[in-house]
Image (cartoon, rainbow, N blue to C red):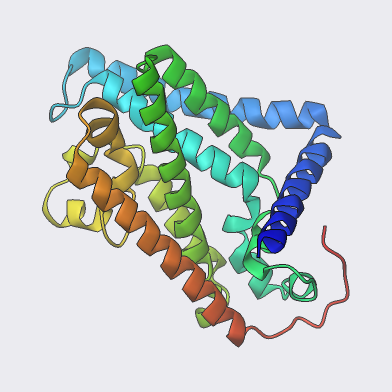
Length: 265
């Protein structure tokens, strides 16, 4: 068992190295893509900064808290899509019969699929989140440790949610459109202060569209650690991961080969 784990680790590490090497072959494109994503995120924070100049508090959320929302969500989205860049392309691969290459290899299908690609725009998100935290976050040892924990959890939530929603393609056919809508909605709500939503809207953010677990971390983990929120977030992350893996592999049984000859790219 230990040998098998080492082989999987070696395989994943090699895939990441090859993805990075491939990206660095076109360095100018790499840096421009990452830079444009950082600029895009900066524009959103500029409007938030203008808003807080007029309204210092929004339901007890300060400008610094909103900065931490972006620091947590962007770095989580960033690392999950740098290391597992195919998580948002599962529906496309299923619809076009491109899973055949992964099924033919003696590796776990889902893991093999996820590590096969690195998102270049996600590099910009990752760097943006780290810079925002360095500028506005708590740089004490405890503050950094809490931020690292929040970053890991938010990345896992992004990853599992994308795998779950993209795997709908196995059941409803071409799900690229609905998968993209889920992605946009999830990313959008993960960057808004949770407390501006009330009633059913707030309930949906912690159930159907679990972006609330990410957007509330600046309050429930970074500012005033709430054991109930932290425990619920960990449980929800584990449940979401279990559901994502189950739905993917159950759907894989229904997959019809595209009968395409090709190699992994």
